[in-house]
Structures are given as structure tokens and as C-alpha cells.
Length: 111
Length: 114
Image (cartoon, rainbow over all chains, first blue to last red; front, side, top):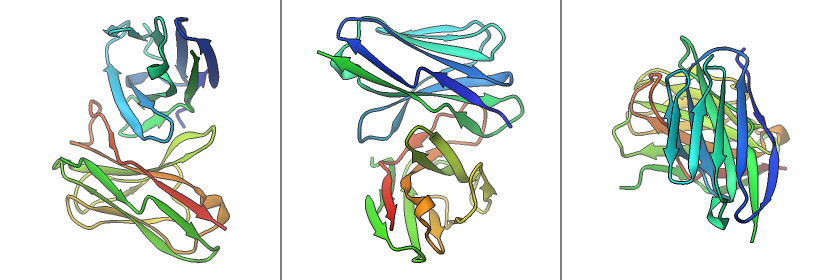
């Protein structure tokens, strides 16, 4: 079945440093979604990427979808303590109706 | 507008006991889902309901049953709880089951099976 690998599993950064998490799928994806889960909270939708090579920005967050639609990344510029949480990618395989979640990257920000 | 509401928030069971996790959404969404979240494992789909009256197995359905009671409500039942079912359970909904639908999650149920 489809697998979505996400790295790193954990990342500790000093406040103000940049952060990137990467997502790789074993199969071509129709689209990829990103979610954020604050400690003790529930996943909250951030964005969806659909087109090959697509890049979207939300303030300090930049999301990219690879040309082959098999990988994606989330980059945060100048992290803040409010960025703390676990970031999940979730891929939808071509012809599938089930999202497959990566295992997430847990971000800690040291003030 | 409450979104997706799950009850209970916490539950402790003994091995072999049964229980039902309740989920309701007020967004008039057609599709509903049950996920479990274990440390280091991400979110794994247990069951989903694409529309009222239909249910389908997800990645990890063994030991669970579901009921789509109506368009608003989707319950998850553990008939005979096992320690391996200790987890955080999230209900989610989406407008329709399509390739472009984002998921709205409930606040979760933390279940411990002793």
C-alpha cells in the first residue's frame, strides 16, 4: 500500500532559526495536505497542494510540492514559540479516497 | 458553531470491557472518519463513512465497529477492549469524499485499556 515517509521525526531549534520538514511518498500523489497539531490538541488543516511544482506561502510558512508529485516540504522562516507542535503531511494517492498521513515532525522551539 | 464534537474526552477501561465513542458534526458534512494516533505512528484510519448509510474499513479496522447513525453522527465501538487499543482517537469530517477535501478534526478521546 501507499506509504508516506516524513523526516525528521523531531527537530529542536533556537527561536529565530529556520525549520524544514520533508515528506516522501512511495507513489505519485493526487494532492498533499499539511496539518499542524499543537501539544495536547487536534490536527488543524494548514494547506493543500495539487499541482506539480506548486509553491504556496502563508506568512513565514512555505509549502512546496515536487515536480514528480511524490514529495513535499514545509519550511518555516525565523521560527517563533507559537510554531511549536507536530506537523503532518497527508498524501492522497492517485485514484484513492484515503489520505495517508506521515508520522509527523515534532518541532520544539527554544526561546 | 461547534464543528466536530467527540465524547468522552478521557476513558479508562479494563481489558474485555466494551464502550462506544461518540462523534457529531454540525457542518452538514457528508463524510466522517475515525483515526487513532499512537506515539511515533502518525494518524491511522480505522473506518470511514463516505456518506450517510455507508461505512468502509480503513487501515486498522480490527477490533472496532462503526455506525453512521445519521448525517451528523458517527460512532466507534470497541466490543472487547484490549491494551493494544490504548490510544488517542480522533473523529474527523469533510464536506464530501473527494480528492480536494480537507479534514476537520474533533478534540480527541484519550483511551487507556488496562
